[in-house]
Length: 177
Image (cartoon, rainbow, N blue to C red):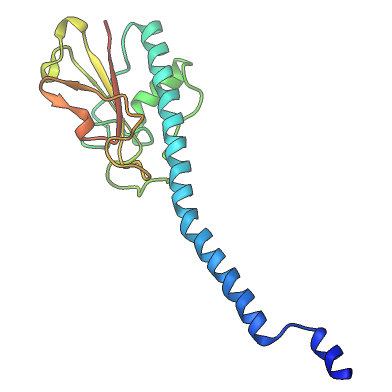
C-alpha cells in the first residue's frame, strides 16, 4: 500500500518530458508567428500615416492652392523622405497647421537609403501627365514588410511616361487642378 501512495504523489520523468516537449512546441509556433504579426502591425501603421499625410496634403492644397514643393536638400534620390534633412514637405504641412506631428517609419529605417514616406511634387506635364491638370504630387512607401509589391491597398499612380507603382509598394498621387 505504501508503494501505491508513493507513485501517486508526483509525475514520472516521461510525463514531465512530454509536457516540456508540448510547451516547447507551442512556444516555437508562437515565436514563428510573432514576427509576421509585428511586420503586419508596422505596415498598418505605415498605411495610417500615409492616409494622414494624404489628408494633410489635400487640406494644404485647398488652403495654399498648390501642394508643397521640396527643396534641393531632399535626401532620397531627389525625393523628400519625410524624416530627413530640414523635412521640406512635412515641415510645410506642420508650418501651415495641416499636420501636427512628423510621422516616421515605424521600423526606424536604417538611417541610409530610401525608406519611409517618399514625396515629390512634379511640374505640369512631367512624365506624360496631362499638363492641363497642373502640377502633381506622388506619395509612396517603399518596403512594406508583410506584402508583395504592390500592396493590396495601394491606390497606384502613373502617367504615360512613368508608373510609380513599379517603384513603391504603396503609392498615390494627385493633380493640383
